[in-house]
Length: 522
Ligand SMILES: O=P(O)(O)OC[C@H]1O[C@H](O)[C@H](O)[C@@H](O)[C@@H]1O
Image 1 (tube, rainbow, N blue to C red):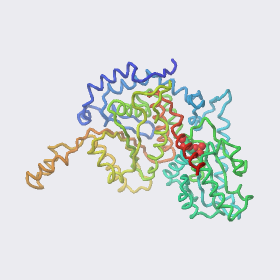
Image 2: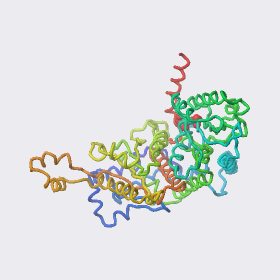
Image 3: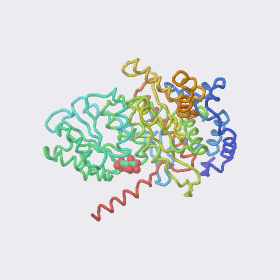
Image 4: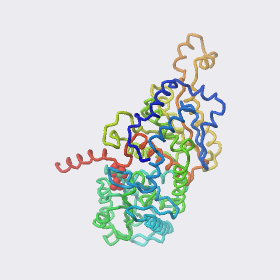
């Protein structure tokens, strides 16, 4: 059966879901939680990953019908098509193969009849050898000193992915200092330059197109700064590039041995698994970078081979559609209980919103249903003291992913116990709330009846606010790879269900064009 390209709301499953929604829309998570084996029936395990989705407004029937919807739009075939290298990015005429970048098997992946696996392997070898030389100090700057600082110059997918991973893996970091320059605001590059010594800094210019205004402007500014103390003959020791545009890289003055490949079958926001991840390998070493890829590959296999009712990215995508399209929730919060993951929400904003922020379906027709969710969030416990008030007692329904770890990295068990008590405490508060009776009982000893009645409405929590617990044993490169790949597959699943193309981003263009026009007229 081919991919149907049909309006999901016209499917039989959607009709059934609508009827089902009318019946169950007022269900309460507190009542559901009393069902026998609720937690076991609404939990999934995969290696070191434990997902509890029992605190949602869903029943067995909801999951069954959502899976029916996935089957009716032939998600299985869509997944197969992505892995096999079909041109699923139809509007740009490209395959989408970030999964091939982390595949360790010999199984060929063909593009135009040519196996791409050898190029991937060769790029990985180049990343390994270069990273080893820089980290060990064998790679010398123009005055013979070892490299101390790495600066990634890029924006969007050429910045957010590597920056988020390097931040998340600080625990595994080596002696090199890592910096990321992205904004065309000159304050950004100036602030970073202040901390650098040209003799010991390596610049990694990352741009798939090598035409991006911000990146080229920052790279030129940095090159000019560098050339104040060095000569053009020193550039090969300090500048490397990751790009598909070899001509532009050459024109910039980068030595051809210093170019790391990028391919048009890798989307910018899915590119950290390619040489775009060079800054990651430089910052944490190639072995950790490889483990990140291996973790992602494990999630790829899970996504490809697991029945939908046990498939973690598919289940999370379906639950999100339930809220987005039936409860009409507008946003989703991503709440990592790990300070290291503080950049994950920013990263996911690009991955999710650039991919599924589309209002035209795969037939070119305007959609008449909701698509891409708005993703936002921050780390626990800080955000509990910031925006969580609105999530608990505001008027909006905001489904939330709580991401946490069973073990702490530094062994500070007291901290970790408190952190995870907050993690589960928040989820319980959201789901079960606090009734009038409970508040009354609590206030009984603290004042007169009038005062109690006055305060009562403000202290009641309605509850029934949904969340998922996404818990890994420990924050490692491997588990991080799994987590990021999980969200990537959730994105694609939702794009298929909404009948939209997730891998183009034409919406980014108009503003860029207008800015260029304005610049020319200045
Ligand atoms: O890597 P580059 O070609 O410089 O592109 C950087 C970014 O440019 C645009 O904003 C695209 O929408 C992003 O998806 C991309 O990651």
